[in-house]
Image (cartoon, rainbow, N blue to C red; front, side):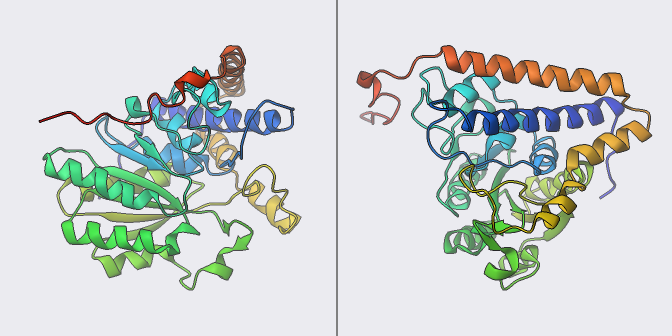
Length: 328
């Protein structure tokens, strides 16, 4: 497939989205250090912004995303409202799920992100259901499901890949291989050194890509999404990236060699793309400063919105939880 020529405006949008995601999650890091700001476990994807931005930017409006516990980047790249997203992370009533989901089970149906599960490996079976519905209704949409290298060995993921291969479902499996599953190195938990090759066993194409190169991720996403959209069945993409923070913000990464972190910091997708756009004359220092300031202002406004939002009242505990069946 011939690579799509990107306009300079689109390239700036890719960069802007990555900056916004990084700024949003860095604010969460800061809020985690304050008392009584964020309940629960905060699991971030700093360093993986090119995957979320590259994949989601290749989607059509009717496409569905199914995310996991590192979902903020996927949702922001898809256009989730910063204010209500931050409020939900704070467990406030004005959040996208009225404070009931918190950060780990976010659902934002208005951007076609109907479900997120923090259960390791739970996303792909959910994606099978969504893709089956798309196929059954003869829709043109594709379901994209994100999961990590640790989840890739779960039986639920293999079952989902097998079933989607049998039924030729329109699913793009995106494995964000960030080198770590909890505190385990990739080579300690995976017998396969190239996870995307497992796709062959389920009769689907599988390819690997530099997950810190946003344009490479975008182009491969377009190619594999076209395969899924054309009725040929599922596809698999392994994005090679790195987890720059611990499994959660309570994890201080004592098990990681500092030199390894320093080496990957030099491969930061945002720094890398900023340099490329500067060298191409698409960005200049003033424009970069405006993009960064705008991201900071938007995130600050989201925090203020979340702070001002009340906590849910106890009498709303059972609302928006169950769907009442109707009599046929």
